[in-house]
Length: 91
Image 1 (spheres, rainbow, N blue to C red):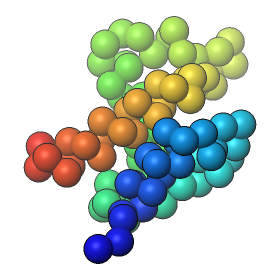
Image 2: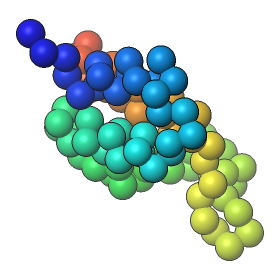
Image 3: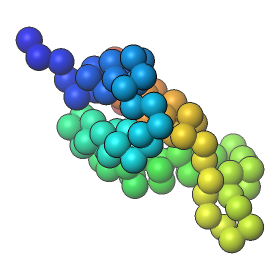
Protein backbone atom coordinates (compact mmCIF):
# COMPACT_ATOMS: atom_id res chain seq x y z
CA UNK A 1 0.00 0.00 0.00
CA UNK A 2 1.35 3.42 -0.90
CA UNK A 3 1.30 6.38 1.44
CA UNK A 4 -1.15 9.17 0.72
CA UNK A 5 0.14 12.61 -0.23
CA UNK A 6 -0.90 13.72 3.27
CA UNK A 7 1.14 10.97 4.94
CA UNK A 8 4.15 11.77 2.76
CA UNK A 9 3.82 15.48 3.51
CA UNK A 10 3.58 14.85 7.24
CA UNK A 11 6.66 12.62 7.09
CA UNK A 12 8.60 15.34 5.26
CA UNK A 13 7.46 18.00 7.74
CA UNK A 14 8.40 15.80 10.70
CA UNK A 15 11.85 14.90 9.41
CA UNK A 16 12.63 18.51 8.45
CA UNK A 17 12.79 17.97 4.69
CA UNK A 18 10.66 21.09 4.13
CA UNK A 19 12.39 23.34 6.62
CA UNK A 20 12.85 26.77 5.01
CA UNK A 21 10.87 25.62 1.93
CA UNK A 22 7.63 27.52 2.54
CA UNK A 23 6.62 27.68 -1.13
CA UNK A 24 6.96 23.91 -1.54
CA UNK A 25 5.07 23.29 1.71
CA UNK A 26 2.17 25.52 0.62
CA UNK A 27 2.07 23.91 -2.83
CA UNK A 28 1.97 20.42 -1.36
CA UNK A 29 -0.70 21.42 1.18
CA UNK A 30 -2.83 22.56 -1.77
CA UNK A 31 -2.30 19.24 -3.54
CA UNK A 32 -3.35 17.33 -0.43
CA UNK A 33 -6.49 19.44 0.01
CA UNK A 34 -7.50 18.78 -3.57
CA UNK A 35 -6.74 15.03 -3.31
CA UNK A 36 -8.83 14.83 -0.14
CA UNK A 37 -11.74 16.66 -1.79
CA UNK A 38 -11.44 19.65 0.54
CA UNK A 39 -11.05 22.31 -2.14
CA UNK A 40 -8.07 24.55 -2.71
CA UNK A 41 -5.71 26.54 -0.52
CA UNK A 42 -7.82 29.60 -1.30
CA UNK A 43 -10.91 27.75 -0.05
CA UNK A 44 -9.12 26.77 3.15
CA UNK A 45 -7.90 30.33 3.72
CA UNK A 46 -11.47 31.60 3.29
CA UNK A 47 -12.64 29.07 5.90
CA UNK A 48 -9.90 30.20 8.25
CA UNK A 49 -10.74 33.87 7.64
CA UNK A 50 -14.44 33.18 8.31
CA UNK A 51 -13.57 31.31 11.50
CA UNK A 52 -11.35 34.12 12.77
CA UNK A 53 -14.06 36.64 11.91
CA UNK A 54 -16.68 34.62 13.82
CA UNK A 55 -14.40 34.66 16.88
CA UNK A 56 -13.71 38.40 16.50
CA UNK A 57 -10.01 37.68 16.00
CA UNK A 58 -9.59 38.54 12.33
CA UNK A 59 -8.26 42.03 13.12
CA UNK A 60 -5.37 40.44 15.02
CA UNK A 61 -4.27 38.83 11.76
CA UNK A 62 -4.88 41.73 9.37
CA UNK A 63 -2.35 44.44 8.60
CA UNK A 64 -3.04 48.16 8.09
CA UNK A 65 -3.85 47.66 4.42
CA UNK A 66 -6.38 44.90 5.15
CA UNK A 67 -4.20 41.98 4.10
CA UNK A 68 -4.38 38.82 6.21
CA UNK A 69 -1.04 37.98 7.81
CA UNK A 70 -1.61 34.59 9.41
CA UNK A 71 1.47 32.75 10.70
CA UNK A 72 2.36 29.62 8.74
CA UNK A 73 2.07 27.58 11.93
CA UNK A 74 -1.58 28.63 12.28
CA UNK A 75 -2.34 27.86 8.63
CA UNK A 76 -0.64 24.48 8.90
CA UNK A 77 -2.52 23.66 12.09
CA UNK A 78 -5.84 24.51 10.41
CA UNK A 79 -4.81 22.38 7.40
CA UNK A 80 -3.83 19.41 9.55
CA UNK A 81 -7.03 19.60 11.60
CA UNK A 82 -9.15 19.79 8.43
CA UNK A 83 -7.52 16.67 7.00
CA UNK A 84 -7.76 14.75 10.27
CA UNK A 85 -11.45 15.63 10.69
CA UNK A 86 -12.18 14.43 7.17
CA UNK A 87 -10.31 11.17 7.78
CA UNK A 88 -12.29 10.64 10.98
CA UNK A 89 -15.51 11.30 9.07
CA UNK A 90 -16.30 14.43 11.04
CA UNK A 91 -16.30 16.76 8.11
